Image (tube, rainbow, N blue to C red):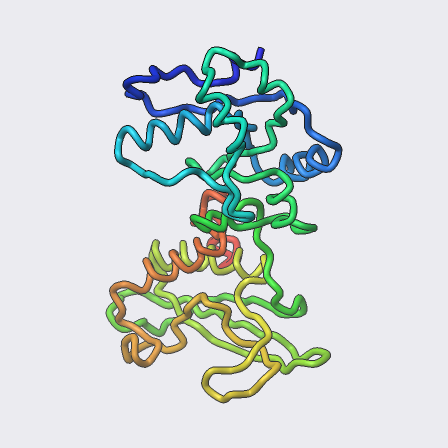
Length: 285
């Protein structure tokens, strides 16, 4: 019964925020949409949204002065079911006209109210196993980068101290050999061997394993093209000198680097393991 798929909200008051049905029936979807949903199910959880749910969401937001915008697919920028919903406005007691409308809109697990046409989402995903929401940039699946795959990551302890920290230091050594069409690089970075430093070490190792640490591009410092360069995850390459010298002390560094890692989907939640235990494995404690 189609009416069972719609959320029940008082047409006059709209006091309750809509909650979306976890609809398992793929109603009137063609084979292409079903194939996209099968691929999507391997990346994230989702629910199919009915046109009435979208209508009620808009009415709730209008009534509460949250938004006066109609929901549109952020990929094709088309409104959802505009014509049939106009018909529904004229006769709210008749659900029969909805029986030929495919419920071809999805709501993704991490997005609170970003809707997509299934086919538009399929075009966004393509052959990838991960993607970003084009509105909030939340990452679905495991994002993999284009860093050359022949590099090495090594970390060890040193008696040296990062300026401002009374503990020994973790030294990270990256080596990316030159390959066909690009020149490689060798980099050293430093972390204090404390709880925060070990957490960042674990996250940096995961980022490296996902090929997110470096990319091939143009060096900002030398102008050299087709060379391995940092890929937006800042590292401390000096023990001292502060932020201007890429060193310590820097009171905001840990928060910044964690935000940069999270923007690439590298978080403890995405890893599913305790960061301290990963750090111990890397350092062989």
